[in-house]
Amino acid sequence: MTSHWTERYADALMNTFGPPKLVLTRGKGAHVWDADGREYVDLLGGIAVNALGHAHPRLTAAVTEQLGTLGHISNFFASAPQIELAERLGTLLVEPVETRETKVFFTNSGAEANEAAFKLTRRTGRTKIVAAAGSFHGRTMGALALTSKLAYREPFEPLPGDVVFVPYGDVAALEAAVDDRTAAVLVEPIQGEAGVVVPPVDYLPSAQRIAHEHGALLWLDEVQTGVGRTGTWFAHQHPDLVSDRVVPDIVTLAKGLAGGIPIGACIATGGSGKLFDPGNHGTTFGGNPVAAAAALAVIDVIEDDGLLEHVSRLGARIRQLLAADPRVTEVRGAGLLIGLDLAEPKAAEVAAAAQDAGYIVNAPTPERIRLAPPLVLTDADSDAFLAAWPAILDAAGVGKEIA
Ligand SMILES: *Cc1c(COP(=O)(O)O)cnc(C)c1O
Image (cartoon, rainbow, N blue to C red):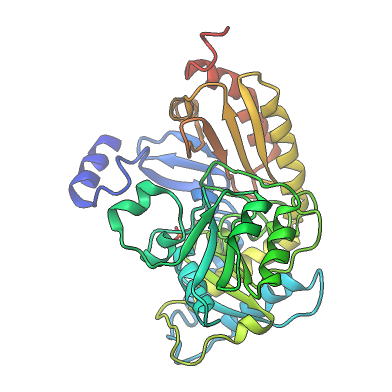
């Protein structure tokens, strides 16, 4: 069955992603099944997207009900789910620290959320963006201009300009690069695509101070880290990740926000929420009632089921047990965004061996494994994975030479 589909895939789809690792037919919770009927524990969750796992009854019901009531209307018109979601996100973002006005622009993806934010920063009258090496902000031309990886950028240059990259986590480098021409400092609270790289705890507070000293905006890309992934609503609110409170001017979201229904959001606080005038930006699908209803359902379930606490507790346990194997040289992350370094650059082999053993994990770099499972991952599924982990490393040949 699978080989039949992969042949048709190769004939019908552009080869941007390489051959698919599996052809999947259905999912339930943190489990998925392939076209040959094999079952896997999904520890990648659609790349940090399936916050509620697969086929969650409350998400399914919310989407079905909204689609059966009012599915799409364009932005000539407004709908209650869109307005409620914007209000809700604003509250989650600023309420823990202060009352501050928030304004939201909805999109369909992370790249589009960053495009919106990029355009918003131009409305300051400045153009320079200071971003970080190792960053990932998406694949559209604007988002790509903000993404540091040369292999992604070079085939498409020239890209929109005035973006400067500085080493990630380095406060002195920010001090040196940010000036009075800088429109915004853009960083991820944790660099996900780089393999879950966590900056020092003073990094985000310092980035905020430095940006504001120069009248620049602090823009945090929480596309991967937002909406409960790290055990707090937003990673920049996590007490283990920041030494002082951070109040960003712009936050971009997408991935987990609607649990798998395409959505993105550019949220601006304070005066930066008023930088766009009518006609400055737009979207046909962004903010559509179905995506907004899905996001509201995700937020409700995270609250009702106590998932932030679950994510914190389970994530800490997984990190601790993964670190126990000497072939793992470092484990990083927060909540259920977890990255680890292998003693040898065999991440692709490890991901393949994990898949053979019935576990989906991701190899973002040759040395690094990333886990971003559904927030509803059960203790039983994570225990089964942790029990299988040493044998997965064996099968991938990690550390064989040393042993
Ligand atoms: C995935 C990701 C994006 C891009 O999101 P798309 O929905 O793929 O466009 C942007 N920023 C970060 C931090 C991401 O992880």
